[in-house]
Image (cartoon, rainbow, N blue to C red; front, side):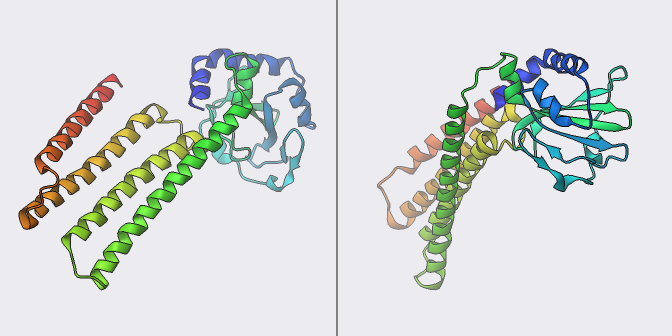
Length: 280
């Protein structure tokens, strides 16, 4: 989906010109909005709003009409609308449609005392203009795969969370208190947080598409979050080994080597953050 938005931004002027020109050559009949679907194959939804920003028609799709939304207040949609003085047309930036769940752009046309809203499926529009090649079956498989992986990672994160709480409660209420158990709980919680952050980002970016405002930073942010959580977990493990070494003469792992490795991770993370920040 990131590709859709990037492609639109790169060709925004030509796309908007195509939509505007096609609309100008099309007879606007506000009594029968279904006629628009004949001229715009990428159109997925249309409706009409009056001067008081109340919706006066149902949500008209290609194959159905939803009349339950008639009378809804649509004033919030006009907060960033600036109509062209000559053509009385405004085209929005890409966003996720609450009615269809797809990435779309909306053309708003002022006709007498009403506003006609035309929602275009961005993927289909770019395909029609030969700006992208999209395989719908592969896209669905990819989306479902990311969804399965994301939810599975979320399940693992909650399992770790439950494990951390369980062993801590058992230690406090049933067994003899041991400092090692506390460290194990903290490590499990830290790993749970890191995995949950990664799962959340995967679902947001590849399944639900929560936001496109910071998509250029998403990959670097999740990597920084994940590495930070791992560094914290390893640091706690190193501290635990130091305590074991002091109390039980624990010598299975050299704590200095582990701390040296963590230091290398911290330096690498600092260099990565510096490079990405400077590049932006």
